[in-house]
Length: 323
Image (cartoon, rainbow, N blue to C red; front, side, top):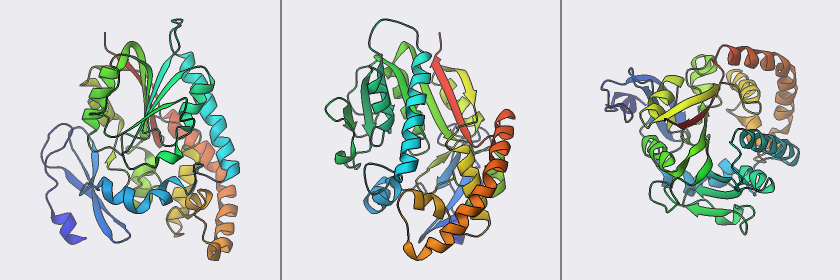
């Protein structure tokens, strides 16, 4: 750990400022990282930067779940209802043009959100990592999927009405290049929707290594509102709406962070609802479920309070091209 903390992380990849500060160490299995943050734009980074090939080759089933459905059936059903509501909400924000809306989901995973848009009459396109299992994609005969780096794959420019970067920007190697490409792909009246964990939230500052949304090594970058604004405004986007509340992530994330803080194995309950259940741990998981039920209502009110103060655990930002 000491050798990692003594390394010079170099200039900020976003604003090129020197002298990034080390915030705290993170140890994941046999790997050691530190979280460093730029004093100027506030972008934080996992250092050294995790390599894609290591993550995808060793842990993709554990991270995404062992089947097309990421979660156990009851949670998956709730998730699908939320996807339908999300698709309906963002479609309602588009101007009525008479043409079939074109939706691009960057980092689409199995295409669950795109399936909701497909059912609402949209033309749907998904982009995923080159090592993501193609067999997991939903509705492959109706949704156009492409695998590879967004910066290099062929997509029609200025043709998309909605582009999503839903909990994806924190995973990519070059957020600046991704936002730049999104600008080129979006049409003049289109919307870009970004959701990222809020590194400036009360929870991030309180829980640090134990914060549920930190998710090292999968999360390479950690965004504050200031760093997101710096990133999108220099690429000629304007923010038309932002919030720090996400119904399916704020409350559960806070509950899981509290469980981590209590000393339970990190994110054990979350892994269980993904189907990564260790049967020798059933008794202990039962205790965590009971504790979680007791925490739910207080965490709900705390999440709502945090979001009202713009310090909730998830940043959701809707953008359009600057005039």
